[in-house]
Image (cartoon, rainbow, N blue to C red; front, side, top):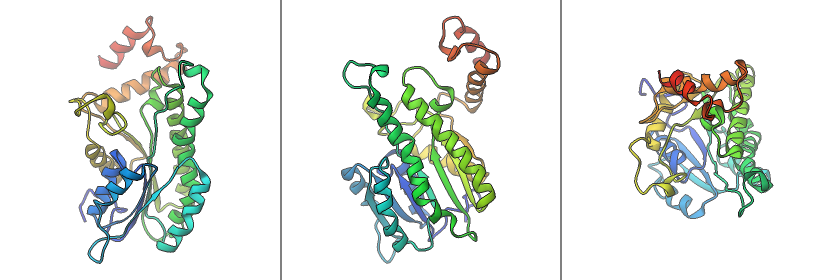
Length: 288
């Protein structure tokens, strides 16, 4: 076994990944497959999921790969999936990655504050999609106390530094952070063999933003780079996996987070980093 490889990533273990048809989810599936892990790939894009699944042959010479078209925002869909997984993988799930997410735009010209469905749909996928998965699958992860297992929830820096422009997305990812923190705290007592990690990608070139760029921007990381970084931090048993990219260093990220938290501690107005009367001071503090 590689010295920097998390113990969860071992031959014969089983990984369940949502948002598995593209981006970070697909890159994680590729890495799991390379280590001889069984794959349960979940996505709501049938065509992309079929194409992704074809990359992971399942026969007598390869681990098992199954795929499931699933709307993660529907708990009924999760509930119907569980018996199939219980039957196929009676020993449970060794690696659970809840990664499906979406950026929802407001309808028509209503704007963000005039369209309740903008908030409803965003939270349904980006937050409830995670809690549904936890409620449905957690028993399959925690039932065996004799093996090392892991859960990864994909968050966002926007859920921490909270930049203006997309309040529903930011809030939905802030909720994921809170959920992950509580899950880690509780499992540390109830299932200490199961580690929990909050993946916080930097600027990553995925299908999520490919529509804005014909080619990967120089400042962005690839999904594979994010997975490399994630696995290194998992091996170090880190909960917060705060990824840099080719433009933003870990140090800059830490300073941005401290500034955002300082709005509360110092009594500044919210989102002060982007306000005219504070932006120069924020820039000096963060970049200086």
